[in-house]
Amino acid sequence: MLVRKTLGLGISFCRFASDYSHAVVGAGVVGLAVASELSKINGSSVLVIEKNKQFGMETSSRNSEVIHAGLYYPKDSLKGKLCIEGKNIIYNELKPRISGVDWIKCGKIIVAQTDYDDFVIENMYTKCKEELGVPVQLIPSNKMQYLEPSIVANRGGLLSPTTGIINSHSLMAYLESELKTNDGDIILNTEVLNMDYSSSSKEYTVLCKDVPSNEEIEITVDNVINCAGLYSDKVANMLLPLERHKRIYYGKGNYFKLNTSTVPPVRHLIYPIPPKNGKSLGTHLTIDPDYNIRFGPDMEYVNSPADYEFNTSNLKYAYEQIINYYPHISMDQLEPAYSGIRPKLQGPGEKGFEDYYIKEEEGFPGFINLMGIESPGLTSSIAIGRYIKSKYF
Image 1 (tube, rainbow, N blue to C red):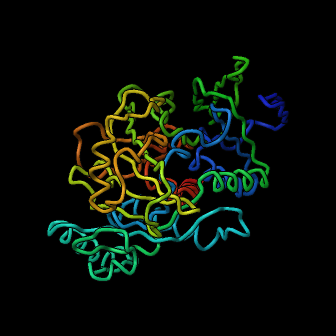
Image 2 (image 1 turned 90 degrees about the vertical axis):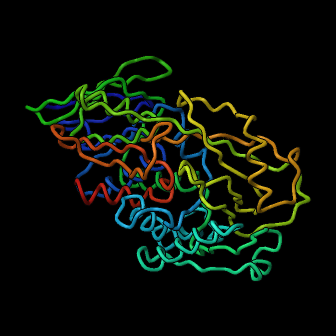
Image 3 (image 1 turned 180 degrees about the vertical axis):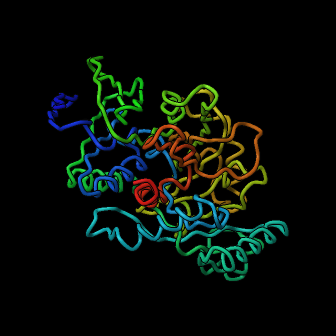
């Protein structure tokens, strides 16, 4: 059957059978990376559906922009494997002058102040050397002054030389360009309202709404990849039966900036020992490509995926954490910068490691759910795309 449709942005197309081979829901960095990889399959036709007016307006643009080395995750976890692979792809394949992706391999130091901290970093060192194969160095306190003179590390630190920072927008722009080079399409301002699967035709019908006009559009596709991030549970539950419904929790982090430039410079990212509650990696010091300093994130659960209101009540706690390793600022020199929200699979009070959820759902061939893709999702993004392409397509 010949199908003709007109999507928002005035895109017309004409294909036999399904309108597209793959629809990716969500144009964050992971959705763009997945779509970019799928567009390289011979004969594929890929559509990215994004409800916002631009790509990457949620988690992908509201984070620390760190290229993680892969220090913290279990050896056989998807988070660990895809983080390390994704890091290597960025450094080896995305040369800034060629790709336009802006990154710096600045390194990171995890600082130790107490006997307990020292014990933690020694265990991390052993794990990285013996299990993960991630480069690290133990730095005694008397040598820290040569690496970072302005940082206090009473018991030394752990140097991760393959940690870096990346401009997330430049990475997403690169992925969008790769997708379009391979004739993939992106429709913005388009919200997925519902989905249905036909076992007879082996295709999915995706009901969308053009946000500005409220016009509804139906698209048929062979495969759906759910990369909707903070809204991935809602997209998943459009197809899954009630007893298999998913839930995403919203973990908000606030980021702080300095309102003064008269502070000692820092050349590495500086992290404290991760808190024992396991909810985050602690309030750390990061830098941008111009070596401007910022701090964050803290961590709190919120009820809405759109609750970006900055929580100033966390300022005192963040300041107390920061001056343990960077005692050169006063609390009134910290001011709100921005906040971001992570899609978390664990709710308040739940403990233990939670891996990425990447799965083709039983009874729905070609329906791939990606859920809980929080940090190190930015680092892992291209590796996630390649993983999905090789495993499922």
